[in-house]
Length: 517
Image (tube, rainbow, N blue to C red):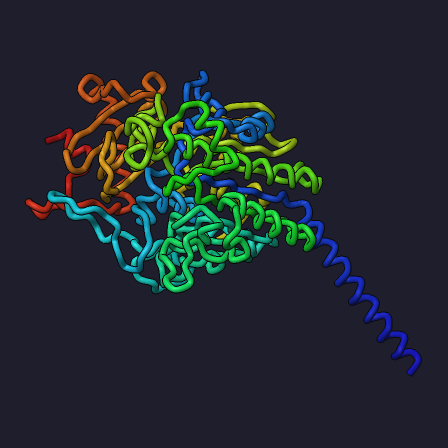
């Protein structure tokens, strides 16, 4: 009996030791993983910052006051040629799935179930795109079934936190709720892509008797208070991260601001300085919203410093599409992103080129800049590689390519000869330069835009003509044919949706067919 008792005690001790060592090993594995902050701004243009993303400062860089973006740039790397899609939902779906918009088919903005937000057109009939956004489960109509980025990170030990604008799926579908997409916590995210109000004093658009579709969910503790939405979201984000730190898990914070999307409200913490500078009242309000986002970035950076985790936290700063310029702004429309042409909704650079900064202590050389181009779907494989996820399975094809070699100052290892693609077989509704139904490709310094409705092609050398003012389609026939073939081959290879001509009842031709005809 004594022998059996001794053996039993030894076995218990052995099992306890194994469990302890396993726990320690598991904890070490997660502790060694870097924390990740993905800071996404809504509708922020390439020029909406005091950080120049060109070879010189511009009047717009002098207009805005964003000291924390400057601080981040000094500590990290600027990407001067970072791209998203022309409008919001396609970008967000590409980010969370790693797919190009032409492949996932969430090509316009989403809101109500099974309802398309395409504007009416007399000549084109638009395809039945995935109006319900992303779904983590099969069988949901009009969705892209995909394995979401936060779900993979969650499986690998990350605390996953969503704060702010979601806009991943339509109302009444699984993708409406970020917690269905792998986020442990969802703060204020739902189907809508804009807030009814930015003010706590207005309950962020919530009314007890008649809740609006656009009203920001949650945040009840701030109702009736004198606080701007950007600040409230930041406070909640820091509280959520604090809990994650106490749990000893690495965290993925998706800090997704509603700002600077319409409605344009003045953030009174910063508004007066822009009014004193004699800015148009609407533009002064817009600038104050930009600075509010900058303050949020600074608050999060300060928090990371205070907790002594800044060195083990990577910050990725990005925006979801070009700066709004077609409507709702002060001053002359289509001029708010100069020298880039046009703005949100456009295939021109003003609609798709974004401010991007990455900071990662001891990994990314401070105060550096790269002109290697990247696109929004590249964030998916990059973040997984940063998190040490070397092998993973998804139900979807991944189009994005990791830009970690660029961060490691090895741009030659990043395939800069690869083409980037945009596809928008839809109609946004606003009018202006480059705003319309079409497709585009960027290859090296060259960019081709194909407008479906007019059956026209435009060719630009972006390196020499950042304003896209000199259309070389008639003088560089060889380059035109080359890019038209690249774009056509890609669209065919993934069976990209194309609109129909209402008069002929035929699909609009591919770009290389335009040249042949």
